[in-house]
Length: 429
Figure (cartoon, rainbow, N blue to C red):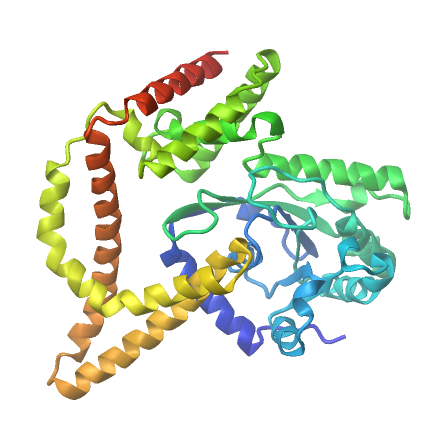
């Protein structure tokens, strides 16, 4: 079988995502690249929280063309299947697809063996589905079948390695979020799978990978207290870490808090706290507020108002020139894509393409109707877009501060205070 290198569509997609991740996310940190074995076949086993965004964000940080195993139902349309094949996506069948998964996956697994023999990386999502909760779901055993099958076909000397990957999004859906991509230590398949189809060894490999993947992600396993632990990390982020800390340090502090919180609730069960958390979160959202507002009794908005007035002309200029390529991807993703976890990848990819097209067309028009202003206009577009975006964020924050300062949310402040007391008890437990 011919293993593809950099196909035209793959190269184009790689470029789009490379640009897109730097504009779509506020902060990105990639750690653990040194853990990836050199000149060995690697299976990247990642958590799966953000549909199509997950594999492309892993692949764009690698130097080799990468192959992905994705759910088979997205390959139903012939044209879509052809496009997906051209960017190295391969269908994997699950029990819910109504087929004998072992039989249906024979051909794609054989292809995986050949890919690994060529030292090309494969990305797989052992959880078998995607979900928005920041918790590691039970792993399927398909990754073990691929690893052991490759060594059975080509001999153990090919030395398959499994590298756990943790994708940690501060927000799965929206622009301006933070993203930590965490590559863990490689797992040597040979050191665990010494016998063919040995159930005990396969379960041992599964357990080792589960532990490694859990270490690489924000993993809240106490499901009875999931909302409370998750929301308290958001409420008191400013107490866990300072603003200038790296995403990796923030990740470590959050992991420490989760361990303390899960132990606290194990020792101090509370049947009402989840309902209280959900009710509080809903009330904060319905009142147009955010958690960070409750960190102060009153917010000074004078500086914000002066800044908003000074930068208003640039904001208006930015909106006029950049609104359509920003709004069209958001509209399309939010109205045409039923699964919200596919929306962020569509916003990012379509946004990069449309901004490029709109800016080129607009600059061409300016060049035709003016004398020598086209290059200055082109330079102004990304600058005004950046200023306008941050102006909008500042405007929303200022409106939130004004609502909060009205003093009509005393009950919410009291409830926030009770969560703060609980946070202190947990951290001191």
